[in-house]
Image (cartoon, rainbow over the protein chains, first blue to last red):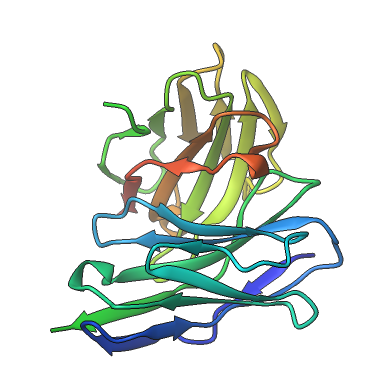
Length: 114
Length: 116
């Protein structure tokens, strides 16, 4: 069975600084996708970034980038130049080629301070 | 609107009552997913439709939970004889194609269900 683990329940960062959120996962699959979702207090889950496991190059989306270490089954999210609007719950999620459902971690609550 | 729409946004029911939660996916989206999110937890998969076919219902916690998507668009999640442990936010997501991992899932705002 696949599992996703986020070991940081809460993180905080000052505006304009950089913060890294950790995620590890466990799977016996070789072909899969990894995602970071953001959930503001309004509750709507928003896709931040995704990584395809067969791609060695780390995905980037503007201020968001990942450090994907396939052998270590690690998938961390780096947020550069943090903004107040980045305050939210962040969920790491996994899906394999053999299924369509997302498996989520327990989340990291990020607070950005002015 | 262009996004996934869920109704009602909040639902309060007494233990033992039946409830029905509605999801309107993005127009043209083939795949539809239901997730249950308990307080302080990540969402957990309940069930998945591709058009009107329910391809995976492995996450439904008991036979009190039933989902349908009869015309391949709007979906309803029904919970019979509700219990307090059913209290959670129920999230609906849709994606453009089957094989949803190739297309991102777009989520609605969820329905917060409280069982008294």
